[in-house]
Length: 487
Image 1 (cartoon, rainbow, N blue to C red):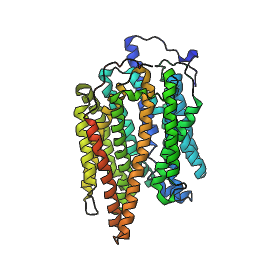
Image 2 (image 1 turned 90 degrees about the vertical axis):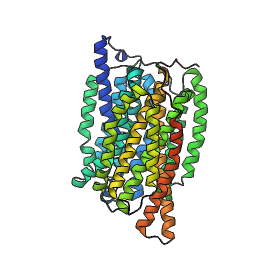
Image 3 (image 1 turned 135 degrees about the vertical axis):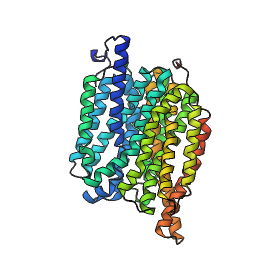
Image 4 (image 1 turned 90 degrees about the horizontal axis):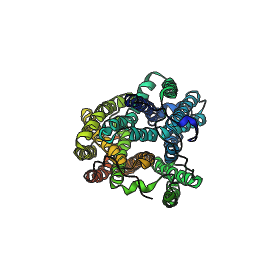
C-alpha cells in the first residue's frame, strides 16, 4: 500500500463537473467490485455435496469453507477503520481486489481441501476490506441530501449478492464442476482490478495514525472467537471444539478490547472508535440492522433445507425458487433510496420491519402441505421487507456520525453484519436441529420431524423480529452535517 506521506496520495484539483464525474466513476467501480466479492460469501452452500464427494471430506470439514470465510471477515473488518484512515482510496482498492483475485485463483486450481480453504481465506481478506471502503467513500463524496439513493445501491451489494449466491452456484453446478465457481469469477475480478487500478482516483485525505498491535490481537480473539463459537453451535455434536470455549474466549477478549478502545480513543488512536455509539441513531440502526441480518442469513440456511428435505426439491430448483426474492430486493433498493431522500427513514422502516416479522410468523406455521407458490410469495415479501429496512438503516446510522468517524462506523457496521450473520445461522440451525430431534424421538416420521424443526427455527426468528419493529420507530433522519466528535 502507498503510505499516507507518499506523494501518490495527493489528488489533483478538479472543477465541479470534473469532480462529480470522478466521484461517480469511483463509486460505480467500487459498487461493481463489491458486488463480485460479496457474492462469494454464500456461494459454497449449494456446492457442499459436490465438494464432499470430489475432495473426499466430511460435511463438517466442508462447512469450514464458509465458516473460514466468515471468520476471516470478522477478524479483518475491525482493522479496516485504521486502513481507511492511514491509506488512500486507490491503494486500498488495489490491495482488496488483488487479495480477492489471488484467493479466487488459488481456489480455482486447488488440488485438495487445504489449498481450497487457503484460497477462501485470502478471498475473504479482500472482501472484508471492500465493503467498509465503499461505505466510507460514499459517505465522504455524496452530500447528505442525496445519500439515500447511493446507499440503496450499496444495499443491493450487501443483501442481494449473498441472496443470489446459492442460485448462481446451483446453476453452475448443474452443468459444470465446482472449480468453475471460481474460474468464471476470476476474469471478472481481474477486469475490475485492472479497471480500478487505471481509473480509481484518490478521493480521501489520509492521516498518519499508529496501529495498536494489542487491539488487533484482541479484536481477532474477540470477533473471531464469537463467530467461531456461533458456527460451532450450528455444527452441534460434530463441532471440533465445544461451542462454549470459543464463545467464552471471544466474550472475555471483547470486554478487554472495549476497555482498550475507550482508553485509546481519548488520543484518537483506537482501532475501532466506540464514540460512534454516542449517536443514538447509529446505535439503534446497528441493532435493527443486526436483527435484519439474523433474519436474512437464518432464512438463507433454513429455507433451502425445508424446500429440499420436506418438499423434495433439488438444489437447482431451490436456487431458482429463491431467485425472484433476490431480484425484487435488488430492483427495490434504489427506489427505497430515493424515497428515503424525500421522506426519511420512518415511513420505510416501520412497514419494512412489520413485513419481515409477519413473514417470519407465517413461516413458523409451514408444513409439508404448504403450497410451494405460497412459500415463493412469502420469500418475495420477506425480500421486500428487507429492502425497505437496509437502505434507511445504513443511511441514517452512518449519516448520523461526524466525518472523522465514518471509517470507524463503516467497520463497525461490517462487523455487526458478520456477527449477526453467524448468529442467525447458529440460532436457526440449532433450534431446528433440537426440535427435529425431539419430534423424531416422539415417533414423528422424518419429513414431518424436519418440518417441526423448521417451524421452531422460524418461530424464534419471528420473536426476535419484534424487537426490530420496536426499534424502527426510534430511527431518525440524520442532521445534514454532524459536528466532529469531542475528545
